[in-house]
Length: 94
Image (cartoon, rainbow, N blue to C red):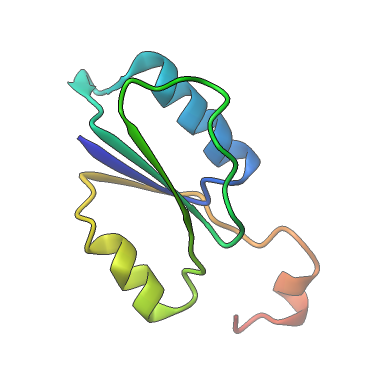
């Protein structure tokens, strides 16, 4: 199983990635690859995983970049990205 976590550099994304690395499974299926994508370079996992972990810097507000993540053909996508600053209110259309 290939998993994509959008927002993989944030607190919730990192906690989810850590749990997945510890278990090695999701819904009783073995994880083969975990892709952590975030607008800022996601940190490496603090837990050793028994599968490939890719760290991707990607601004999903760019349609081409968002499409490139989908072409990696993940089986599961966790969308945890969010703007958690005043920028969200100041630049609502972004």
